[in-house]
Length: 365
Image (tube, rainbow, N blue to C red; front, side):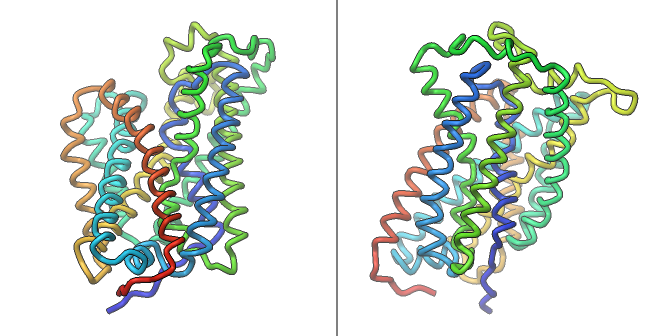
């Protein structure tokens, strides 16, 4: 039985981009301090916007209303598509794995310090796999709940800026990143953080061609809001820490939140960490979903059992995650993923462009 093709709306694309870009990267140390980090963020957001336009032009315009996997099969046949789907499945499983182990590690450090890491990892993966086993539209509707924690987190950061606004702390410019090589590396890492929307490879072809322009506006708006969020975090970190102090502060935003205290909420760092679990888990859910879809098309013809593959991918993440020795290994994995994601996107864009130029369609399902 052939299932009806899913569709995605412009609003869902906005939610998708916003939550994918504001995950684990937001917690980590800024790429620089002061105004130079704002320049790096602006450069990363601009490069991300250019990539969004390119993906939209290649996928929403050519592959619209067909779905990514049937489109690839029609363009290059089953043999080549088999290898493509295998690469997609491996990449998305690895991406979900790297994000979820970092989430589990952060929760272990900041919220549940006395809870074994494997229990935290297990609970996060169960929640993610359950949501990923639904349809794409249902999965996005589930992660829409994360918009409220996102808004509250942004409000908390703005309050911190207003309470300690001193422009002199943002100066001098180029205090730390006067080395052009280091500055360029910061831009690369910034671009990698903004370009963490690989799931758009699956989502863009599901956009109605008649609403393609609305979809472009939606993803562009999401990219802009993310840039504001990263800039706000950067300003807070620079207002509270000098360049020398920043080297000893692994997660500046959470250490900064420790300084806030009211009669209603006393541990803002714990409160913020709990809220951001809902934001960060969105990327894990969507990557598990994309991996499951790739495995479903890779290993079966029914195309209606991706829920089982989502649970299988989550089980693999849990089995490997239990053997990660320490926090520094997790950080090394994230650093490796930073450059891997850029290489993957570059290869994906080149491959999709080649397919879009290939007019003769092969027989497909």
